[in-house]
Image (cartoon, rainbow, N blue to C red; front, top):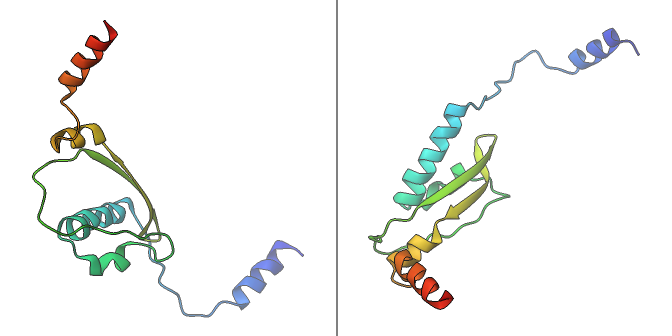
Length: 119
């Protein structure tokens, strides 16, 4: 079949009404991530999770309670598709967090203990 015939077949199946196609930009994705951190993570508005996360790919649970006074260094990577977060990865600087909680000694103390064992 020549390409002209394919075009005729494709257009014959289309309706005259144009469908609005939503475009997703980098700015839309940034706003989505800001909304996730501000509303879901910080404000604990779990009721908006369905607006942010893809239904098939993400489940999570946030602990409630009083805010912690420690700060946690972390990096998050999000995979966004059709305006929703479909996957995310969180990399937490665990050593500093555990040190703040008093579970692990300060880094200087750990290094000193290591040197003493080595000698």
